[in-house]
Length: 151
Length: 200
Image 1 (cartoon, helix red, strand yellow):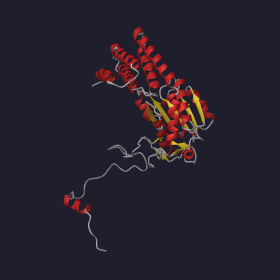
Image 2: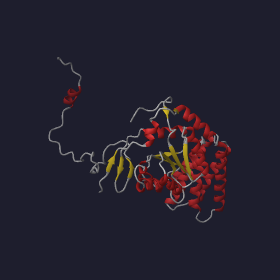
Image 3: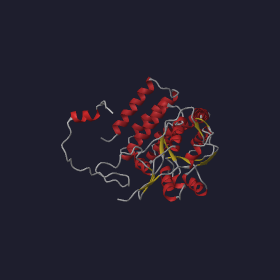
């Protein structure tokens, strides 16, 4: 076993942030929130495009599409994660989880992907609103993922 | 660790140079808007980890925000390169990694790459700023050994795992030894902690 060396270090960031000036946390968060909102329209358009690409990939089911499906789901999740997309984010995360599980275990089933993509479409069409429908959809997706999880 | 920050506390990032790395240009723009909102005046945007390595070789950066999943050199490989291949103080630069989904195959890589923080999306500016403030007051030691270089992964230091000898100078021996006396009675223990009037 190798010897581990430990040492203390004060970063430049630490020194700079301890200087007087700047803005209040409240103001900084308010400005940043407003800046993110400015990207919402383009961001949601990117989410819709990513979902259309996923639907196309599910229809064609090309060879070697498994990793591509994961990448597309992860890209959708990345963009959805910047905005308050509640159930859409949950469904996208679930799709990433199940594709990752199925790739790891080499047990890919397209219906498990299809049901996720359809749920994503329904949630997006419903304006990403949390409600009974989205809760039921997410519960269904959770059971699909649970079935793929190793014992 | 110092007290938790209040909303009225001030955060000064005006002098800090922040490097943003994400292969998705739209995500990069959003991230850039967020750090601008925090008051950062100088930020450098890179669409790949490879481009970021060139920047880091040329100039000092105070904070790095990097996406985990990128083609070719991903965020984990980038942080590993930063910690191991660059000279001091560059190798000690605080790094926040951003992740949407943590793939099973990447979990160990994520733990061992040497990032200061991994922040999972959904990413709100409030959470990101909280992490930046936390980093500024980070009191964790840096650990350097053959297999790891980065901030101490033991955020709460409970010592080495049970039955494992510690590798650090401050780690206590795992050997406690056999009891040399009988256990104390509960009444004796109660007497030790019972408040008693003392005549001085």
